[in-house]
Length: 376
Image (cartoon, rainbow, N blue to C red; front, side, top):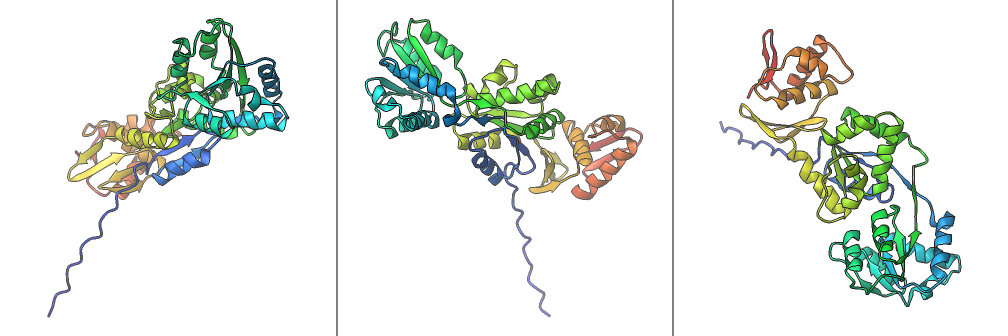
């Protein structure tokens, strides 16, 4: 009698790099694009727009600033963002203001390639742009004398939601007449409820990372937390437990001022921001050897031998406490204190029972009259 051929076990497909993690998106513009980048990498994405953009055509400040620019010849123009500079030219055209013709005699500096594209797309010539794509290097270029003496010259600076006080102040200190152009302004979203919920999630540490793509979004989150009386709690959570990821140093400014350290990609791009989250989140959670098994504890799930295992909050809290001290006995009373929403010794026992059912026997050991530990 012929024995049936052996069948090879199906290979275990490794989970996506962000599977088991929750990542918040505070962006207003391009939030779907960033969310899709994170979702494709396995993250559970929470959307909480922290700002909204006042439409250019509704902004009387921009009309007044444009008319001031048109009042006399301009020597230098600084374009800080592509969407902002393009919007300025389009708005001026809609208002029948001859902005493009007026700027043809000026030296137009671009902060980065998108601003450079907007300058060229508007029919103007870009004179210079920094390799770093940073406002700081633009300022250094101007102060170096590369564009000639600045005293008495008219410089128009297109703002991108942030008033850039240091940038503008340094130019005015040279004796230049600096005209700030608020091409678009950031205000709180009409529905603040998602942002308020995000504050609660960050404080409760039920979100693993928060992404920021603009300084106003970071400032808005801090402001809403202060209104809720949770500013200190939010700062503490973003300093320990929840990873703040900013697209660049300008975006990180309000967080840095509040004493919050951030991680940032080398390039200020959405794709680079998503890759930074991929690089930073899993590296915070070590892969533990539990007997012959490998275990990594993530945000709301565990990865056991390459298999993602989602767990209820109570079991996840117990596992996280045990994994923080692998091999050490953790007292039941300490585990009770870590249960989300509170609980008692029975709740810990139930959480351990569910944990064993999900992960299999042998990983979580009971130490009689002392507590529990991971069987490393």
